[in-house]
Length: 115
Image (cartoon, rainbow, N blue to C red; front, side, top):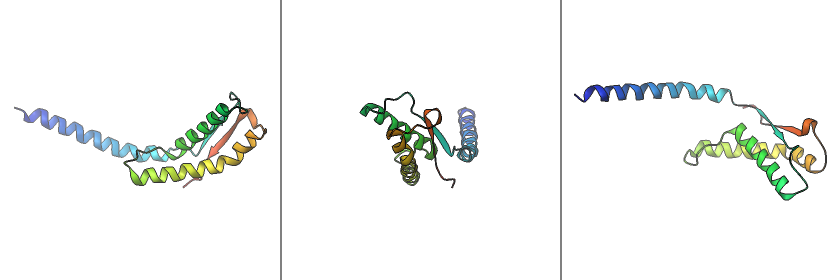
């Protein structure tokens, strides 16, 4: 009497798990290698503007490197290292903008090295 609903639930769970496993690698292959950081709308002479600018760079780093749960220790550590590297690489462009230089269209590209 209860066997059919249980079998149907088990089959749908197995189908969902199989779909999830096949989708994840494909999603990982389409990760971006660069992100544009806009700053034309910010007042970079204020602390709030500089903080917002730094937050946009950090957000771009999370988009490039992924942002994993702290329970996924290996992936979270790799993501943090990648994010630190991306932010360090973007520092020269950031400092140039804060120093008064302007990039085309008030944005610059944050990128990560292809792995």
